[in-house]
Length: 109
Length: 122
Image (tube, one colour):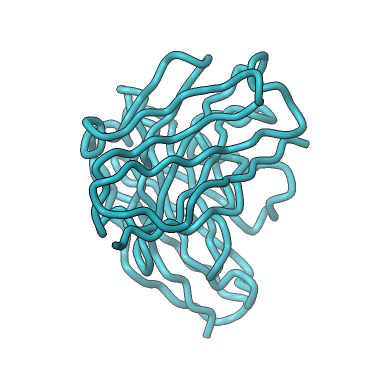
């Protein structure tokens, strides 16, 4: 299974934008099957982005996703205190398996 | 609105089998074209995909767990289940059930249970 690499932590001040990267192998670049999850402490993960750049109903448009080559990215604009959480990318592979990135802790300063 | 709820023992002895059930409400598991999956998270660590079942019989498992894991569907109870054999302390984690494919969402788990903590200890 392909591995997905995320930075351990990112931070930003309220109102700023932050971007979290997720780098994998050719499966990331070949298919639009990357998702992003938000997990505040002590809660279940919540899907924020699917198929690279699509938002499920109810997710604010401050959250956006993109991809360049084998790296997917999650950008949060207009950072708010409530955005502080762990963020995970995932990939649905060509073998119909799923792999998660190691997670990135977002701190709102 | 589809909802998921995990249930099962919170404590399992080493070398025994961990068994968890996920009860589906708000839709019929037998007629829903969704993927039903299990994901776990050891304390203080990241998410690990365990496996997924599709259309009740097609299963996909994490290669690192494949020899010990099985996922099945019980349509009469509207549930799907996880069994993990020969557990060790490394299997201690919060276990989540989740589903992929609802509400037009593809390739992402869009509905999750609240999670259940399982500790492996004698």
